[in-house]
Picture 1 (spheres, helix red, strand yellow):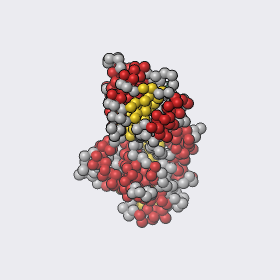
Picture 2: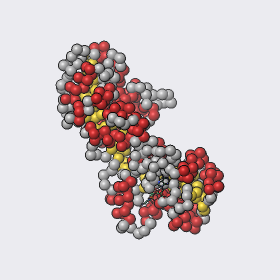
Picture 3: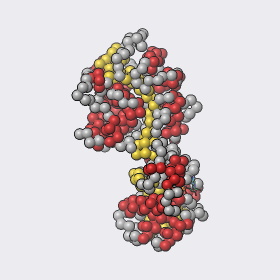
Picture 4: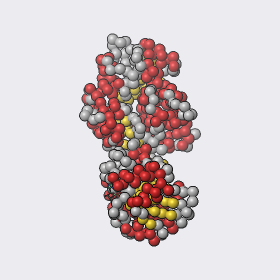
Length: 493
Ligand SMILES: NC(=O)C1=CN([C@@H]2O[C@H](COP(=O)(O)OP(=O)(O)OC[C@H]3O[C@@H](n4cnc5c(N)ncnc54)[C@H](O)[C@@H]3O)[C@@H](O)[C@H]2O)[C@@H](O)CC1
Ligand SMILES: [K+]
C-alpha cells in the first residue's frame, strides 16, 4: 500500500525527526532526491535550462537547493521568485553554484524557454487558493510546454483533500517527501500530480496510521478469495442480486455478469419474470427466482452469502419493502443506485443495522444521503464527504467518480489508483456492484470487497480499451484479464 498522511501528522513527525538530526539535514535529503528526479527528466543536465518557481517557504528552499545541485552539473538555473521572501540559505547555495535570481519582467520568458520547470511555490504550508503572484507563475508554467516537476505536491492543490481553488500547477512528475499526501491520490488534486515519485527522508518510524492508502496490485492479490480443495459452490459464496426492472433490464444483466466474472460460487438473480428470463438468456449459469409483483418480499431467498440491491430497481413501494426486508437480515449487503435514493428517505435502515453494509453512491446519490450538501461540493472534496457519510451511516462507503474513494469508520480511507474516465459510461456502476458483491459473498469485508472491486473494475476498463470507447459489457469481458494481471503481480500464477 502507498500511504498518505495529513499535513498535521507530517509536521509532527518531521518535528520529532528533526530534533534528532543536525539542522537542515531533512531539507538536504529532500533536495537531493528532488535533484536526482530532475536530472532524470532532462536528456542532459549540462547545458539544460531550468526555471525554478520559488515561494517564500521551505518548499521554495527545496527547489533552490536542488537547483544548486543541477547548476553544479552545468545546468543554467534561473530562480523566479513569487514574492519578496525567498529561502536565504537556499538562494545562497544556488548563487554559489552559478545560478541566479531573475526579475518579474524576465519571468515569463525564462519559464517558456526552460527545458524543465521546478514548482517550489508552496508545499504543505499552502492554504487556500494560490495568491495572485503565485497563480501567475503557475499559469506561465502550464503554458510553457516544458515538463513540470512539482516539489512535494503541485502548488494550488490542497494537501489534505485534493481540492483545488482557482489556478494550480499541472505537474508531469511530483516528488513527494517522507510520505504521500492525500491530495496526491484524490481528484481534482490527483489529476494535477502526474507521476508521483516518493523520496524517503527517514520519516517512516515517526509516522502513525495513515489517513489514506492507495493499493497496489499485490495488495489486491493478497486479498482476493480463491477456491481451495474443500470448496464447493456454496462455500465459495452465493450472491443474491436484486437489480433491474421491466424498465431497466440491462442493470440486471450487467450486475449478474460482473458478479459471475469475478468468481463466485453461485449468483441468484431475483426479479420479475421477464427480467429473469433476460438474465438467464445472457447468463445460463445464474439461478433465477421470480418475484410476484404483489408480494415483493415474500419470496426472497434466505440461503445467500451476500446481497446486491438497487441497480435499475426503481423507487416504487415494492422496491422499498424489498430493501427494508433485505437490510433487516444479517447477511452483508451492497446497496447501490435506486436503493441509495430510497435509503436517503429512510436512513435508519442502515444506521440501525449491525451486519456488514457497503454503500456505493456516485456524487449525486451521496448528496441524497447527506442532506444540505450539493453534488459539486462532494466532487470538490470527495475524501471528506465519503468519510462523513461512512461515519454518519456507520458503514463502508465507496464513492464512485473521477477518483473512487472508500471510507470506513475508524479506518484509513482508500483511494483507487486504477480509475479512468473510460469507466464513465452507462451500466459501468452496475458491473461494479456485481463485481464487489461477488467479493463480499466470497467472504471479504465490505472495505476489502470495495477496494478490490474498484481496483479490478478500473483495470478492466483499461484492459478493454483498444482505442475505441469501452461499453459496460466490454468491462465484464475484461474482468478475467484484470484478475489474471493482479494475480501475476501477487506471484500467484
Ligand atoms: N519541515 C521539514 O522538515 C521539511 C520540509 N520540506 C519542505 O518544506 C515544505 C513546507 O514548508 P513550509 O512550512 O515553509 O511551507 P511552504 O513552503 O509549503 O509554504 C509556506 C509559504 O507559502 C505561503 N503561502 C501559503 N499559502 C499560500 C497561498 N495560497 N498562495 C501563495 N502563498 C502561500 C506562506 O506565506 C509561506 O511563505 C514541504 O512541502 C517540503 O517541500 C522538505 O524540505 C523536507 C523537510
Ligand atoms: K510545490
